[in-house]
Every structure is written in C-alpha cells, then in structure tokens.
Length: 112
Image (cartoon, rainbow, N blue to C red; front, top):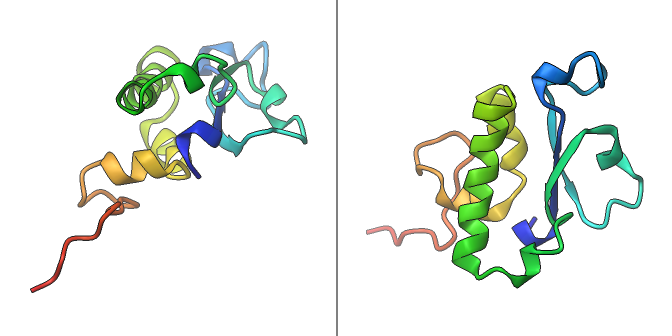
C-alpha cells in the first residue's frame, strides 16, 4: 500500500504494564481503520497524521524512515519485526537496500 494510505501503529516495549497485549509490537494497517485495530496500540503515525498529506513526497519518505528509527531506537521494537511490518508500505520496499529480504524495485532494472 502507498505510504499516504498506511497507518503505522505500535506500543513501546517499555509500556508492557500499560498495554501488555501489544507492548513491543507494530502493525501497518490500511486507512481508514474502520475496524479500529490501531486503537489497540499506544502510538500511531503515517496516514493517521493530518500533516502527512501536506508534506512533499521527499519529506514523507524521510518521515517514514524517521518513524522506523523512532520505533526501533526509542521504543524498543525489534528491528526485524518493524522491517516485516513496514514491508507493507510501497515506498519502504522500494527504498531499502535491494538485497534486503522483501525489497522491490519501483522500476525494475532492465536485463541484458
């Protein structure tokens, strides 16, 4: 799914006492979240932010990787769990190292 349509929801690992069912977990959900799944988590980013639509494409992509870093470094989400969740976002898959599991080419290279 496109980043502009993706809700990133997570609960910091350190908040296990507040939200034991989702602590240390992250999901990427399509917007709108009609089922209310994102509410199970303490934090949200992505399409749930009204500011996202006002950003340029470059700024949105920077925000995506800043969000990834925040989840992992600040909030203790396992990097591989975050990576697996973020693979649902097209812009993430197209911009990670091409030899990373799950990476894709937006415009596949031409073969000789």
